[in-house]
Amino acid sequence: MIQPQSTPFLQDNMAKITFIGPDGTRYEVEADAGSTVMEAAIKNGVPGIEAECGGACACATCHVYVDGDWTDKTGEPEPMEEDMLDFAYDVQPTSRLSCQIRVSDELDGLVVKVPERQA
Ligand code: FES
View (tube, rainbow, N blue to C red):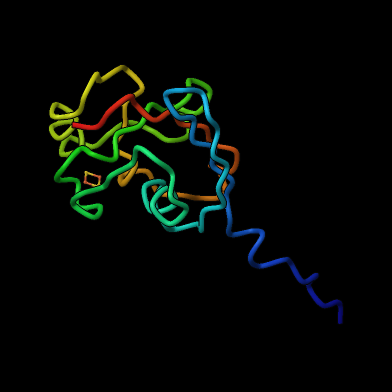
């Protein structure tokens, strides 16, 4: 009987995410599928992502701008996120709260920009 090929488990469940700071500095991090973009930033010490509420969609200090090429894949904010975005600084059409973006294999290569300051 033919055995299924083993797949590199970890690699399949990771996504590379690039955060670009307001000064253009790039931070490339590996994120676990199932975690959030905010958690990847905090775990890797990306400056400018504060996440004061710990991911409860209640602070807007994890605000990012999703790169235009990725907005289809990250999707639209839920109504609760939209309400909280009202409290974010300099909101733009591609603004999202990074704690509400769930990492998946599909998001491998995601690029987000960090705003000049948080709410
Ligand atoms: Fe507070 Fe995202 S961490 S809204």
